[in-house]
Image 1: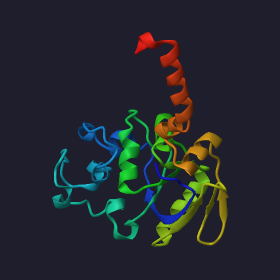
Image 2 (image 1 turned 90 degrees about the vertical axis):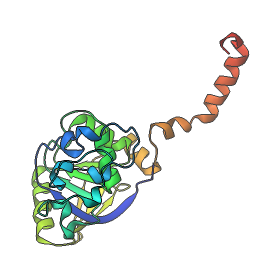
Image 3 (image 1 turned 180 degrees about the vertical axis):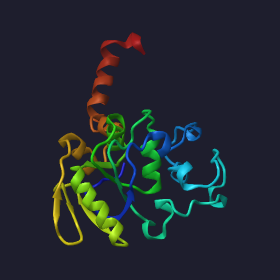
Length: 211
């Protein structure tokens, strides 16, 4: 998992409440357990005019011209601005996989579904909860200014707007440590690789019948 310390990027506004995981990545794309390759089907039913199928050539599919992620002004966005209860519905981990594969590193919303919130951290996405009025203001500024960007500073736990105004945000210290150091569950385990090796060697000597 890549380290996340600080970034500045374009913001894409997803002006819908209660966006569920089936909308984020529809059920027909859940056959794969790889973390990559889901980006082209992110918000599939909203992005395309036709019905998406696994292994189809997405480059040949007709796009919905009015969907936010298809608009030229939001191309290359790495920050998704959302409304309340983002990521509700089923607990599929494919949802953060699809968001990450598409290019989103940060999601800002007033609230998140709990399981999606936890899965985001484990997959290198920083979900930031802000007061609803603050999120409203960010939506207004994003709509009013093409190419609107925010600086996200995880180390200092602050968002810096183009005018220099700073917005503080809270993040669990353990999750912050993991993102800053690029540690997923496997990475955390490997931090104790030497201790695990010594334990296994000792067990082979004291309980050889297990081997």
